[in-house]
Amino acid sequence: MPIAILPDRGVLEVTGEDRVAFLQGLVSNDVALAAPGRAVFAALLTPQGKWLADFFVVAAGERLLLDCEAAQAAMLAQRLARFRLRSRVALQPLPLAVAAGWGGAPPPPGAVPDPRLEAAGWRAIGAEVAADATAEDYDRHRLALGLPDGSRDLLAEQSLLLEAGFDELHGVSWTKGCYMGQELTARTKYRGLLKRRLVPVAIEGPLPAPSTPVLAGAAEVGEMRSGRDGLGIAQLRLEALDGRALRCGEAALVTRRPGWMVLPAAQPPAA
Image (cartoon, rainbow, N blue to C red; front, top):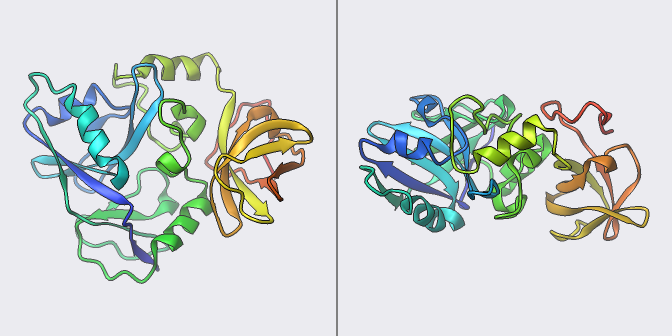
């Protein structure tokens, strides 16, 4: 029943009476659903609908806490602050640790279930926990589930949310109304414009470096993103998910379609 501290995560605090309405018009999911015991997974996009950052929104009394990448916390605060205008909100980073537990690990007070997948476990901000696993253990866990990991798997100002499974992973609201980048996200879904997906892969051979091209024969069909210990995530063109042999650097890749992933009907499940 592992519990790990995640040192690559940071915490951004959003306070003020307009905090919910402020975020609601900017991020991809329904912030009003964040409540005690319930987190919301969301992303900030460019006005053109491209990914900038993703995070978990946690309600904590009269404030919202954003569990985000530590390396992105300053950028995220700066980007959000641009839209503050007359909104009665304040943003500041907090020196709080983020922990995660999975495999039946008992959650501490204040922990919230990971809103992406039940199997992902729980997350806790600033809680006293007895860690018995490492961040590397958690990384293996999320790779086994096929969960993308922010900037390790998505490209800022290039990636689309639906390429990264945000629809299936409960990171997009289709009912709350407008937010920044909403038009392209909706058009991609309803017009069937998706051409690529982040796909979990088994790696047979040396771990390829991020951005290494993935080849099907002589054709380039994608590129490697993150990986560890024989598991990885690659961005692949949909037509490459037909069971053909894939190579990346000196390794062979075998696609692993998890149960939560929904692909267009014309694409058969990967092996």
